[in-house]
Image (cartoon, rainbow, N blue to C red):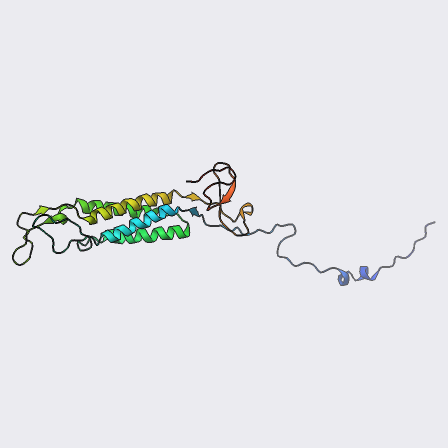
Length: 228
């Protein structure tokens, strides 16, 4: 014979809402992973100081040479006015020289390669070649009693002045420097967990041993590879 004892409900069973733990408020569904925002870091490059200096100096020479004598007087003929690139209204050369200098400094500070810098140097080279090919800028005429050039008379093409050599050297130097800046190595981003450093300094991978080293390093401390 089975004896049934009355079941006594506890207060917690009778009033479950009073003792139930508060539900956690969340907008996410149960078991759904929270998507972390992806932080994209800009691509930076180890711009060479030497290449940057060459580009800056080349741009400065383009500006300086624009104010130097354009031709060399010969014999009794001498030019009394309009003897510089600026006075000949060849403004492209000094303008592009200033743009090249500013672009090179900005590229080095921002650690970004700029194809526009190469384009500027190519245009500057073309401008110098066009100026040197124009013999009218180097043609001198005898002066009359009023001090005016007699263009109807026989003119004489005089040798190049120092300005052509200065701007020519500046354009070539700026072009070579811009090529060196464009060939800069890409630096490894510090946003990845395996590349984070306490001081947040940029790193790069050694192409020989694939170890991570500081971006400023010239020699790999692991294998001795020497960077160019």
